[in-house]
Length: 315
Image (cartoon, rainbow, N blue to C red; front, top):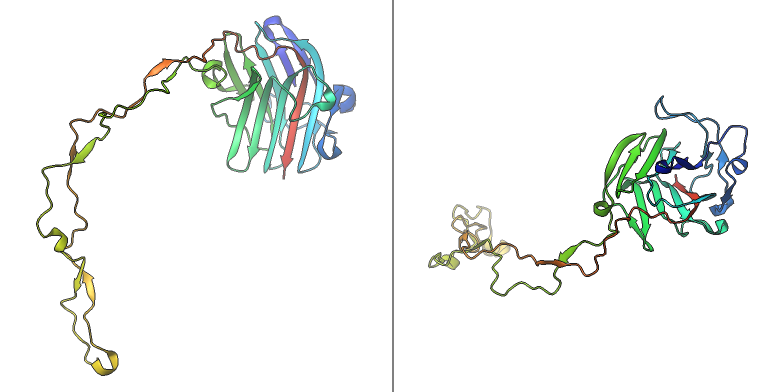
């Protein structure tokens, strides 16, 4: 796992777990784990492709558990700098449901670190059944968490994959999986952190004379005389009373009914183009009174002091 600020040529935090050091000693981490289950040190792991570096990591050992892990970082602010957040994930099981997120967070009490703790960036894969398979990229902006609006599919196999998030001072971003770009764009467009410059006028209403009907009934088309007198069913003219029918024991014989071929259903006038059609009415745009531009929307990391993992799994 690494967190870097390339513009300053500074590696803020980098952690490589080696085989002869315990995770607690190596990471100087604080664990707050559901059911008091600690991640265990794992031997060198299989990687997704030969060019990836073989290393070691933290392995969760029990199904259906939630793990929280945090480590202190030097304090930093990403203002005027590109920030790169990168780590690797391996689902050793054919996962039913689980998440493996990395978070950057302001300096706080590590003993309270967990899913409800404040953070500035949350990034990582979320897999749950067939309906949820996406990579979360969430920024905390002005006290609210904002999820990326575009869909990013995670890897779902049992190999190691490298997830990378790059946020730049020009308010653009890039997400990579295994060092290959899978999504990129504008922080303005792909999140709702900045309100739109214009909105639909909430006070506007459609004029009474506005006609949205593309077609109308032909006023010249009239229902034929006697149309409603045509029965839906008629007596079958080809039916005859069976030879063995006994009126005294079987009752009076009645011919069965059949669909009337002359019946054409409920009458309706033919449709013609409406010459008064004006299209679908849309409220006019007005300047959004809540719009406030922010050329530094990328600067979500103000005073980082912690990096943490949120790991949960269901099998």
